[in-house]
Image (cartoon, rainbow over all chains, first blue to last red; front, side):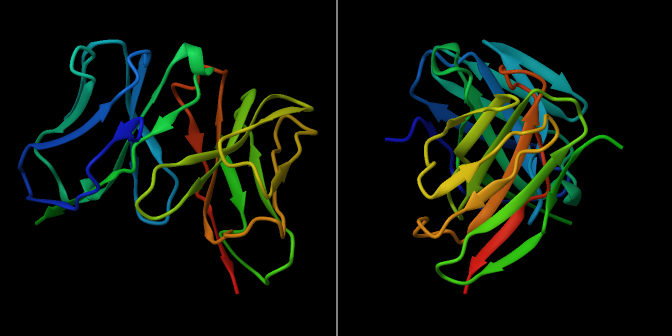
Length: 112
Length: 113
């Protein structure tokens, strides 16, 4: 079993819909949780990071961490075609030297 | 503009050859990383460096080598010992070890021909 599981998709939704992207993990020591967006043939770019549990909002994006369930989510409101990309979750823990452990990424397609 | 520059964008290698991928950053970051990305898989760590003249192996270091002679530069050599080198290679940097905000280059696509 992988440390971080992420549905590869593709997830296809109409423009304007609310998108929910998720990752589950097995290591309860993870403390930092990050979401990256990667366009085709480009490097990933950080969207949001959260420390420990709770929610964090930035514009149309909300990151949510539920440590009791070992589950993190990224919500995108009012989705746009420009949001079409692969979304990667990553997480790290002090006891593994803060090395990022990555999900495989979910490909998101926003249909105009 | 500050950022990370990887070159070349595309690289073709014949079997049995070593090739070196360039990574330069002007963000004044201490930590630098090399990842490999294959279709349907998460990023896998090859090597990382937290300080000049020091680096550590990641999860898949076999067949790769690095150097960190300058803070700004972290080149990766893919040696002939790497059995399956065709992949997308990503270089990243972060201000410190707790890399909650890693910045990535645009990647190098290496193909063995």
